[in-house]
Length: 629
Image 1 (spheres, helix red, strand yellow):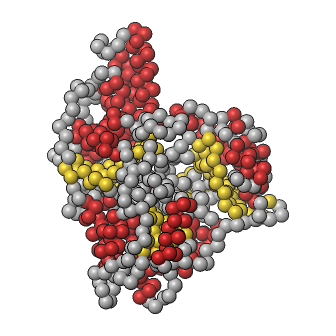
Image 2 (cartoon, one colour):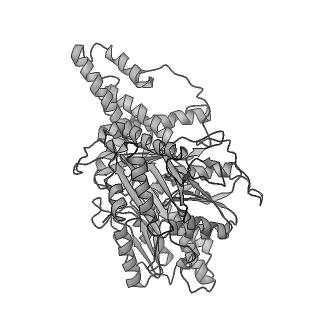
Image 3 (cartoon, one colour):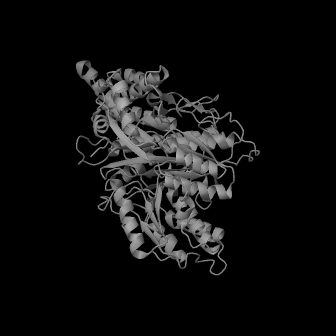
């Protein structure tokens, strides 16, 4: 999200009171009102009007068709995944049917194009003659067919489309920023680290990634559009004229990254090749990240021999492209040690996340990656606030505080974490780093964009700086004081209901837990709160005047007992991606997580009768044995 930086706060850390909503730069009201059409009406009203059209259907057939199209519309809405769209695009996944069809993608892309055009009109006060939208994709097998659907949808909306081909998610946003391109909006087709059968869409304007409420609006419009077409209304069936303007943006994006590295290192002996003498191994996981090897590192003089899985392959045959994946990190660690490399890099499929391996072979992801980035950023910006999701450890908070920083815990979800950082900055609280334990990380200096490649750029610059300063230690030495929690566990409970009811049931479970804690039925459990901002009630509720939208329910509680005092915490949350509930917990005492799980099972899940619509088998297994094996 691009905006003017607010003035730095005083040395006294202020108590934030946010006066801005999630949309930091809201569009003014639309001055151009037009006559309502079927697609502008609320869904049920559109169906009632549609049912009166003679050529549609009649009698019993009409009622059946209305019910079926109502369900079809809901399927489009359920494709929303927080601030993204995701679904099953190919057969082959047990228990899942294809729902991200070319027809659905076309309706969503067309709705996005219309939304962009209307937004630009509201912003400028006049209709823009030519709206330019870029489009990129990862190497998934469903990409080519769905790309045609995106092109058709955007063209139907009246947009001029620029096809970037194989690209990364951060590059799509940057195509709206770099002056020689400056597109009005962009779409990235990816499902990140999910199986090859999945695919999805991410949406950007020059302000940043769209938030959940904006994507909900687009999906609702697409659902009405899709339903009307299924009923034979408002759609001629003619195919719009498709013009594919191919553009090589990735080369420009790579040059942009190279320039940053050269300028900030400012090497005294070889400015243009500041990575001479460094060995760096990249594991792209057969996703879109191979460009970083040959178009960034190689051209800056690095030795990248021994890099892994650089060629794009939509089947992802070697491992899940995910910096949290144990296989990905293990293979990268082995390559670093074999090549005696200075650094190993792991990207996810679309390169909005990353993890690294230091020269000793130590994996740096999760809390360790956040600590590394915090150490770098706090050296550059003393006293800054670091926003993370609420799954991070107490040790990380202590690590940040020991370096003069402030730690704000917030909701799980990279968009939530980034938007909280944006709000803090607008409220006068200097916040330069926002990171999630999954590897998503954004910096104020980089448009608040979660960019795995830019994160690695920062680490590389620090690695070279340390060497130029005479240090013989690698980047891992920056986090040697970070303590790992004694115990850390994640459990999942599948929601045993129809997909269309899963979100509601998940919310009921999470809210019931909150009620149990507040009523004192779970002895020693207390809702957590962040003391440095307006987050309260378990890092969920914004207590300021303009709370942001909640895309998934979640709470975090501190856990203590009479013998050990406070020894851990538990967080329970709805998954944004799948119909399940995630349970994260950490403890500083042996057996602490098992004790927390036993209390959760006996005093909450079974006592509340929730086992009827959530699968508690994993919770029960861990409560009994203290392991999942």
